[in-house]
Image (cartoon, rainbow, N blue to C red; front, side):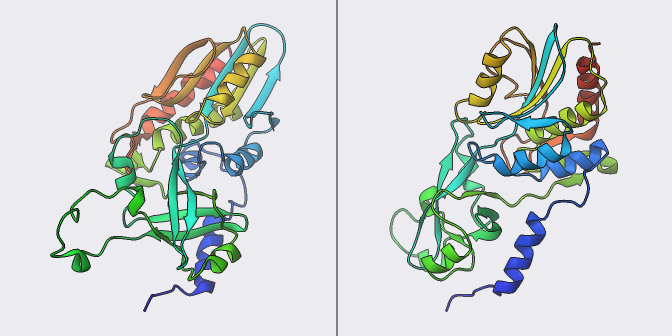
Length: 306
């Protein structure tokens, strides 16, 4: 007999996870916690872009899906960009029992353990009716015991079956979930270390760099010329968001921020300012809050032409 979570409780959990804060966060630490908990599978960044539009006054969404704020005019032209998206998953199929199967999205190398970290973990599926919590099943050691051959092979996406409390494809559809709905690990930024000086979550370095850029853009007085702050789409697919910016501002001085391993972009990139991270590409990717604050100060000075 399958255990099914109470549907009302499941919906309350989903609504709590999806509900935005009543007002924009003001301090850098608050922005780090908020942006760090966001999810944006590459090519499917719309929900995160919507939130950034509310947090960055005067910004707009361009044709490539980037969130862009333009201040000032003339020369010089400065562009500071941070990618919104992450390597994630989409729903590849729905079984007759209501389980979901997965396909990975994105082209960035993440190593063989990236998918294995999903086994037995809580995930969030983003359907048409909002976020739905789920869990990736674990193979039964009791049923597998004693079977010949193949029982000790590492977990991979072919072994991934996501339970969202549905018992049929009809139940899945009723939750607003369909093939190609995005899915990520359930995210909760964890503060730890001496006086809470470290923050950990999946894709934390990239998210923290975006929080630093967002905070710097909100506080900085633009320098002479034109200053552009951009949160770009599809960094982990074809880098189309950054490429679109490069076409629109061909002579710009460009700074990209993100994880130290990823701080690159399209076009004439002056330099990449990356945050160092421990345990990169794991569920506990960790950055130091002091490093984030230093990056924010550096970005605020650069946006101000200093």
